[in-house]
Length: 198
Image (cartoon, rainbow, N blue to C red):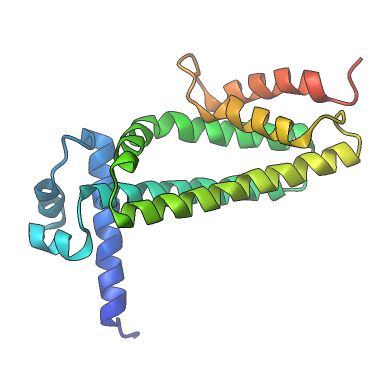
């Protein structure tokens, strides 16, 4: 039987608060969720919440960071897979669309609080930006390799990376199934960049 240290116990509670707050934010909306409701859901007092977080904005930022970290790990994994480029791009696009649609409301709240954020929230934003550049670097490497292997035409790599990521980064109001939408987007894109076009 392992002994739980006070530090581990505190981190476990911190993560419970983030998870619970995030669930309530996504269910009810950020503005309609109070710190009191989060505390009640956890079965603790409001002061316990403030022992861990300075405000509700910090909880939202950390929840958003958790969500984005999950996305980043999956996206980097897809880009590292050894499979044909078109399949890799389609899988990446489907993931990007899925996360964009699912977390659109959360992203709107996050953008709003990031303008008037506390020091803790600003640190989360900086970490997210740093992690997000990893996606661009990984996609850059994938596209460079495809150009080198003559799988796609030799166009400016940065332009191709921006087109791929931005074409699927924002929720499409008409998007139904993310996988179907991704196939359509990448098919259009592939027609323009494939080295095997007729």
